[in-house]
Length: 407
Ligand SMILES: [Zn+2]
Image (tube, rainbow, N blue to C red; front, side, top):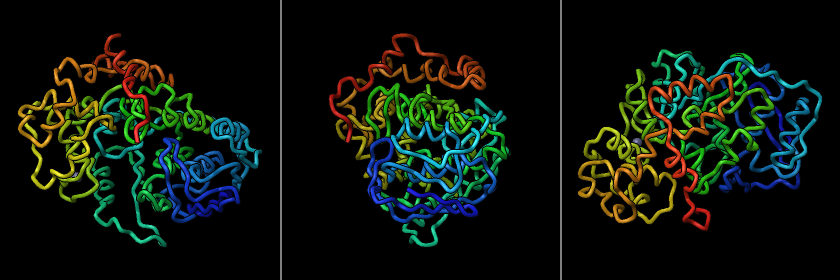
């Protein structure tokens, strides 16, 4: 893979051994659509390791044996690429980037990043805004990234909006981040200007420790995307920007509760559709409504048109997010009279069976870099509480009942 940055535009050329269908770090297959993308709202004079890392978050799935950058990187960064992916990276010849002093939040506007903000109210935001690609038709005009960026601007927090069409480098399954870390590409290019030593992501307990979303669905202390000792964790650290997961030890029920109790409550938005408010009918809205109803102990409020969106949570587990579905089934009054009734057969819906999801898994706080650890720890102590050893065991035995990876 050959990588070139020119005035915010990344172009890359595949080497003969590279392939246009690759795999992201969670083993999800991704197909390349086009070999260039742009990032706006960033300076053009960042440390070469930051340019290299930003590019790698985009080209990693398609790279097999080597990656050649247009400017020399540090030996430390090249070593982290080799250790993590087995690729030869070069040319080598820059001094490593010293770690900056500040933590920024990769701010999406969803409940998880609002909860992270509650822990670090002084942290600047970097918001990623999807824009259309000059050569790829936009078949997703309903995706209102502009609305989310406008909401971020009303928070009153120090904000950098990064615009990018990098999601259109993916042909399949749909436009999206080639690697989950590509959301950070712009933040990385801003890291020198903002003096960043850490970047906080809103990944919660399910994503970090339970192998959630499209990953394996069992306890994942060595999660390759988010563990500090995983390949991405070490690569970010080599560029002097640590991956920080302030809410990595708490469930989406806790992040929802914290977000709804936060000064940013009115700006919380996870829906990518709808302009005046959430659409209430997309899959994300239905899932988050389930959690919100559980947290607020009120009946479910889902419009009729959304019924077919719930289908994925009515099938037999395992599936990503099932811990939250179980949590909600145990707490939403009248759930047996809703479209979720069939799911009741699959779970123990006694509240005690899911009360571990109200507390924080302590190792998640211990893996936060020292500079920011105490602030999370005292916030958790005051607002959430840590899991008991029995509760922590629920995390550590998660998915033990499955022999196979989720598909
Ligand atoms: Zn929606």
